[in-house]
Length: 186
Image (cartoon, rainbow, N blue to C red):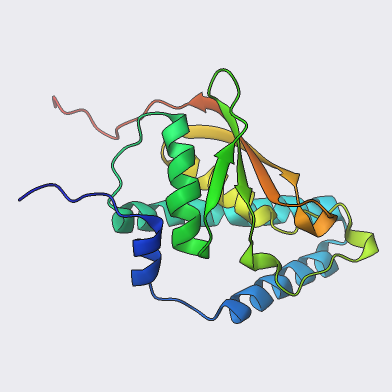
């Protein structure tokens, strides 16, 4: 039997069970609003959203690998392309693009022109430092850490702040060698 070919983000998205987008958006908005109420400091809300996203990303990578049939990526550039073209499409229904590679191939930007998390959202004046979608940076960071890539993920541009797109900068800090829990020769 021939090996199973990797599936595109569109085909995976079409075959997944979907939830109502408005319900998802409004639920996320309620979570952010409650964090703002509870924590009061916008920087603390940003940290909490990032941590929540990290915890989701750590678990989401298993589903991604199981349903996408994608084998190990060769390098960080290929990994970033897979995240943008397959990962974002699979879980959010949007396709992203990868731009602004540095000379070393260790830093790039993932650009989203559409983001379902921000439907119905306007930031009040007292929340201008809020990275409303910071959960996404945590998801990317957590998922990459589970495939042995320690990264730093930050927001560069945000349409809620008047920019024309959403842009995440993803910087590879180090490739972590895989550790096995046991030795094969014992």
